[in-house]
Length: 372
Image (cartoon, rainbow, N blue to C red; front, top):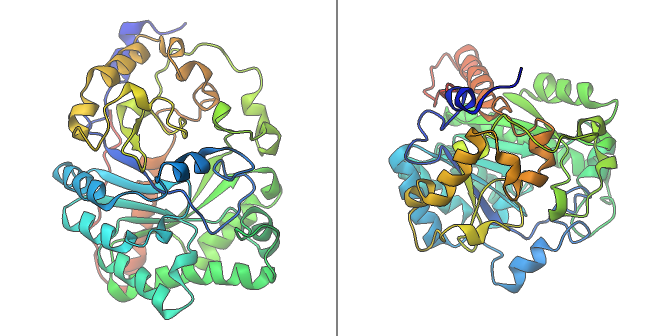
């Protein structure tokens, strides 16, 4: 028996702690990248998104806007998730920006390919500085557990495979190991995790890849994410997914609300707001004020976000744009137990256990409240 709107509203709603301000700002830090990942939605072969931002001087997130958002997030202990259409650590001010955000009390989650953390001493210094600042989580996007697969799914930006796949892989792994070693040296309360996209090239290799990162390298958690096409934001075909069955015969309506407008929002390099992470080309930006002009708190509590939440709580989310065409929501990927709070819990427990066993120290870390 399907739930009635009143029952849906009772079961869902704003996450605890998100009543006034989102739990997380997902920030598009940069659009240029030094990798040429074939399934990245931002590569020129898959979309025109990078061209759009380059034509509007939007390659980099502006530091003044970052500083203001850091102060806003710091007031609520909210997360600043550093991601986007390129490699965040290519931003020339990224280290300074992370240090500033931590000094304001914000929590910082960095998505990175790890290439800007080594092997040179200059790059290692960047790694040391972000760890010394107390960054909360570093997510190394690896997508593989061996050199052969890594060379295919994470090649250099210049196109084609790396000249020396074994060295390319070894440098990537060494940078993750360096983060773990420096964390111990500094006694830093930083979760170090690896993520793998469930794409066709990892078929038959996923379990071995997870074992490699968890057991051989010793990261705190391996996040496995479903493959997304990002709908009509890109030209990516679903045939590249490891789980294409998830997207077959999708429904055209869904009563359970999407979690996204109840816990976080996205901000791009132009200060534009997007309703959710599926909208990577920010087609919903015209619906919201610009973050350069209006505080995030006002936007979060504003009429438009309230309208989307109300529609989803009434079981009518599929009536709205862009929700009506969201394969991730209909396939159950954007659901309430999709995982980032679980990642924090599991990786945090592992971090505390490692520091206790190896160093005999107790580290204080943020413990998430996953209740709603």
